[in-house]
Structure formats: C-alpha cells, structure tokens
Length: 164
Image (tube, rainbow, N blue to C red; front, side):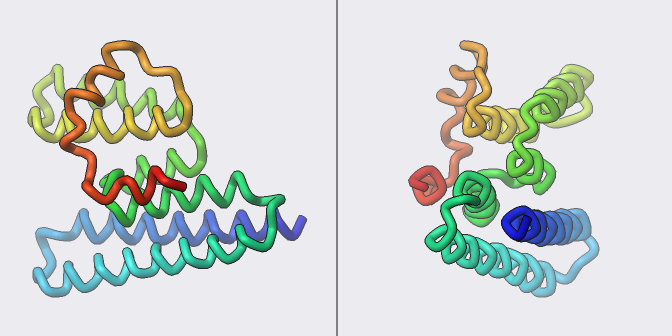
C-alpha cells in the first residue's frame, strides 16, 4: 500500500510538472524571453530533482523498481528533450500505447489535411513512434524505417536516457 501511494505521488508530481512545462510552452509567445527561459529551466530542474529522488528510492526498494524505472526514463526523456510534447511524456509514463497510436493517427490526419507543417509533422510522428518503440509496442516496417531515416530528431544526450 505504501509503495502504491509513493508511486501515485510521483506520478502526480510528474503530471504537475508536465502540465507546467506544457503551459510554459503554450504561453511562450506572450512571455518575456528571460521569464520564459527562467520558468522552463526551473521546471526542468524540478524534473531532474524528481529523477534524483527516484534514483534514491530505486536503490532502496526493489518492489517498485519497474514503475520507478519507467518514470525515471520519462523524466530523463523530458529533460533531454527527446520527447518535446508533455502529453507524449505522460502517455509514455502511463504506458498507453493505444492512446499513442490514436495520437499518431491524428497527427497523420492533420498532415494529410495540411493543417500542420511538414517539419512539425515529422517531429511529432518521430516522437510518438519513439515512445511506442520504448514501450515495446510492435512497429510496422515503415515505422521502423521512419525512425531510422529521421534519427536526427534524437537529441545528442539521449544515450543518458537509453542507458538506464
């Protein structure tokens, strides 16, 4: 029971920080550049601190190891900006491949209807496919190829995330 409460608290904190990061990004145009950078840096720092807390928890309690590892991976992905969309981070943490698939279909539909630019489409598609791959969801051959062809979207510090 105590482990579940701890996991719930960590997820709530991650939800809060993800919402905060999303709000900062959504309000970027209305904000002073200095305020934007300060708020974003502060939020990322809080994510890093949450990750450190999880590392300490993980070293002492193996019963929550898998859930803690998944959450740490998501936090590090957010910090390294492998996943730029807070919503994708949350679906990744909550292990929601079906919802990620729906997001992918939506992005592809938006692209076909010319509602989003090519660059944004490719970036979002890559992010969703990467999350699906990391969750162990079977990718179609063309999806695997898309990830290979667009690996430049992957941040240079992603090894830190992948090396858990």
